[in-house]
Image (cartoon, rainbow, N blue to C red; front, side, top):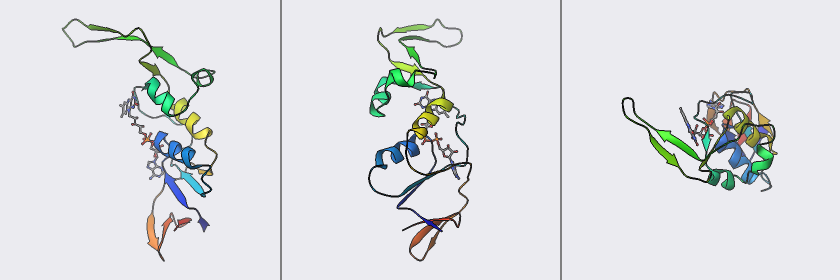
Length: 138
Ligand SMILES: Cc1cc2nc3c(=O)[nH]c(=O)nc-3n(C[C@H](O)[C@H](O)[C@H](O)COP(=O)(O)OP(=O)(O)OC[C@H]3O[C@@H](n4cnc5c(N)ncnc54)[C@H](O)[C@@H]3O)c2cc1C
């Protein structure tokens, strides 16, 4: 049995960001995901500049070798009606690919990762939580 202070199930943006925020906390942290990374995730792939800021992502660094499409204007329309033009002048969003974005967030996180591993059981045993009969946290 391996012991951790925190076991995060799901290595998407939520899980990897939590692990990243706590990686220097001194706690033993494990991230588990049922899929290997990079993995595809259904998404429109729009991420706002505010999100990039809050995730502390350097745009120039991220955009090197990854898709990062600045979006300043777009049209909204309904079938049979004319489209409404939205021109914001400044960047209101970026187009990203989730396979790249999620892998970037996970790769920069320096905690142990157990990928390609579905969590199938979480049981309470002797006051601890036991995951897949393999990992345990108090
Ligand atoms: C069609 C669509 C379009 C979207 N477009 C946008 C957009 O343009 N912009 C935007 O900001 N958001 C968009 N979203 C929302 C965005 O995808 C989610 O908010 C985001 O993915 C949530 O991140 P998360 O880390 O919580 O979950 P996820 O990214 O879903 O990650 C969860 C992870 O948990 C893992 N997992 C699940 N069950 C288990 C298990 N039993 N064992 C181990 N691992 C497990 C999965 O493999 C997955 O990697 C869209 C969503 C949909 C459906």
